[in-house]
Image 1 (spheres, one colour):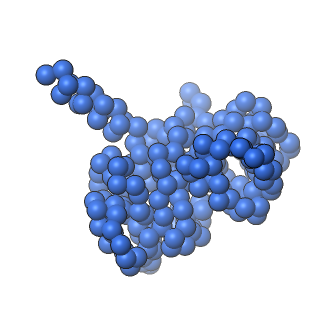
Image 2 (cartoon, one colour; image 1 turned 90 degrees about the vertical axis):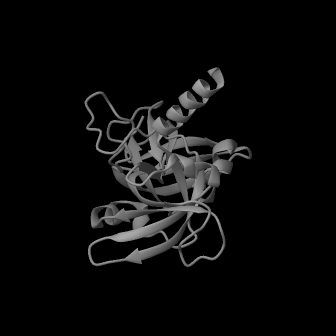
Image 3 (cartoon, rainbow, N blue to C red; image 1 turned 135 degrees about the vertical axis):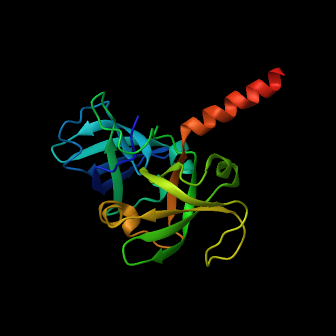
Length: 211
């Protein structure tokens, strides 16, 4: 489990193609300080298992299923990624409960800059929009963010076309310490909705079926 508070911007050092999987090597001197083989580290919001560890790098195996359903398949050597170690019983829960299980991918639609913050609009699969509410939580590339608005079925940004989207406001700290500071319109992002919303939906559905 994670909190969505990014600890470090890592750098992709190597990608070894294994046909139905890749071995991803990341330079991450901070998060590997206490990492062990078998530990979990979130990479752009995807929970990966440490397979090898060096003093400043770690390697993880990424299966085809993950490559197909997340943005990790688009990574190239030199790319930066958001990193977070799994929480411990003494960790501050500064964000929200994040599993590291990506529900789908979206794309940056539009960036609107103001003096002290920036608003980013992100598209998302239509079947995920029902889990979002204004002032609720969403994980974007492993970053715990607060939803400003949800737009069902119509994008409000400059990109033409239809689809669901949402907006988030980013403070300078988030822009400086995460990959969202450099993402451009059209760039893909991994999305994980609040797991509590999915449990509530499941419980309500079961109650309706029982009545």
